[in-house]
Image (cartoon, rainbow, N blue to C red; front, side, top):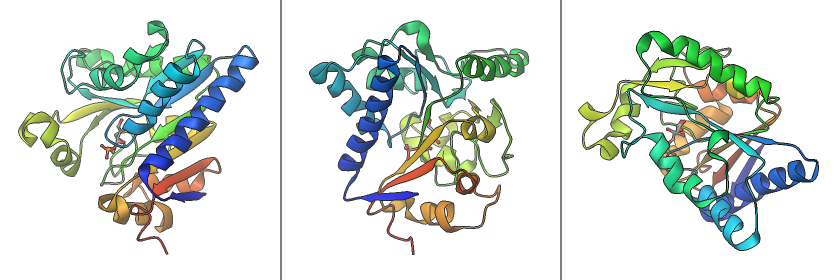
Amino acid sequence: PVSVYQDQHIASKKVAQRIANLIKIKQENGETAVLGLATGATPVEVYAELVRLHREEGLSFKNVVTFNLDEYYPMAPTSKQSYVTFMYENLFDHIDIKKENIHIPDGTLDKEDIAEYCIGYENRIGELGGLDLQILGIGRTGHIGFNEPGSAPNSGTRLVTLDDLTRRDASRDFGGKENVPTKAITMGIGTIFKAKEIILMAWNTKKASIIKKAVEGETSGEVPATYLQLSENTEFVLDKDAASELT
Ligand code: F6R
């Protein structure tokens, strides 16, 4: 399904409310909520609203375990462009989540250790019963996570090469495209697909044409987000501008 909201502020609050409800239901049952999280501009207001719900309405994250989609490679966690820094600044520093419950792909591994690390990442998700809810943004290449065009529908967590457009889009954060890492570690399309619920969010007209392809285009590895059309439990949450090219 596709849900279109007036603006990204309203849409972000709705998504945050869904996350909060999931956490509370799990809490009532003495269970853990397993969340798949994204970085980038898109989810910033969702995280801000979760922080507000924690501070003002007592929402606790003590029973929450998180797995982030991706991290640049190589990338030091202390670097200002790392997704570790992003997640702590936007969410983790401001809530009561346990440090040991946070998982973000490790951008500091030796290359020869990555494959085994990625299997461990998948296994850890599985041991916890799988992702209850995966939050996604979408790149202008149609990537979800860093699954660029050409990614297989059954792909798992792995080292990937970033598309040139993705690196150009990240160049502002890095002060030039030449400083953007060429690789990343990302959960796969298959990893994402196993989540019990998936919410893909997109805001602004600059996402309108890729959203049209993702929602209405033919399913193809050329636009990895089109695979989500095959999933029954995916909701596209859009603002009016991102939805403006949909028929
Ligand atoms: C981030 C991620 C990416 C972004 C996408 C959109 O963890 O996996 O797929 O969601 O590149 O980025 P923004 O939200 O900055 O437009």
